[in-house]
Image 1: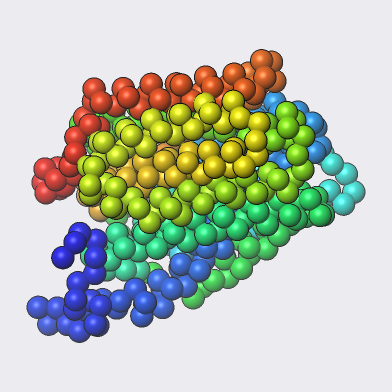
Image 2: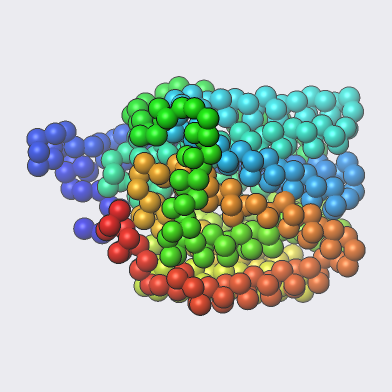
Length: 431
């Protein structure tokens, strides 16, 4: 039986060898089905804001630098939240956390179109969007810890595959719909629809039954408890021969690519003079790459191994980014976006799977939060630097420079533990 596939007894709903009831198949698991729908709605909302927020800032200010500032502030908020998100996910009721996160995002995003009926204060966006980033990070970390609580252990990998495919579908539909709505009624209206998706998602959480899990460290209250629990995740990452260089290189890659969406929008709107709907088309075409990545990543990793697939994926992504800056054809840019997102998707799913394979379950929440916090730390600076460089020197040299740098960093992985074909086997067995 392949790793991550459900056992025969689990699929049929029979009993295990010890006489205990086997887990329901994913298709027959009502909690999992509802959770999948909830994730689709949250992902749809995220992909709406992925397009609508930069467009709103550009419409209101005409400045790519302002777009970079908003993106950077959101990244800072997510990074700060990552310090304690894993601890919160381990200590508190996870279903309630999901509801609070979606409910808060609904209310915050609803404020923008309401205020935009009377005025266009850009400071409101700069205030609301980073706070939304706080709840987004809390939702993302909690969702990772919830999956093992609603499916059987041998169904986790398969469930993650379904979730990635769901995100891809939402990622394709969201930018296109957001572009259409923004072109027809303005970006503020698209943000209003975004808030509705989060409201429905928050209500849907009520129908998800989640098994209670207790972190072994959850009762260690007192001074320094949060710091100790956060450092537990950091120590695990630093001690692992593959996760350590992976975290370092991904931090550099995040610095380079964090403002990529802003650069693409600026290229299409400012340099090429296209409409909002064209932006939606191109970004939607790019997210098709995520769907393809979710379908092929297991095959690619099995055939090439972890190291070769991760390094090759980012190397090709760097080439695609460089070529994007040199192109003036919208269809070519859309294809290059698809290639870029496909490659980063293969690398990202592979690295997430590796963390799940080698990390003990009691540490998974904290390791996830710590990893995201560390490797995202340079993102806001990168977004600000890239957009400022685009404003000063033009967007084409920035695309080329970023692409070449991504290629070099990917090739640097050949000199580290990342190059191993199956790094999960020895440590995964020990864990």
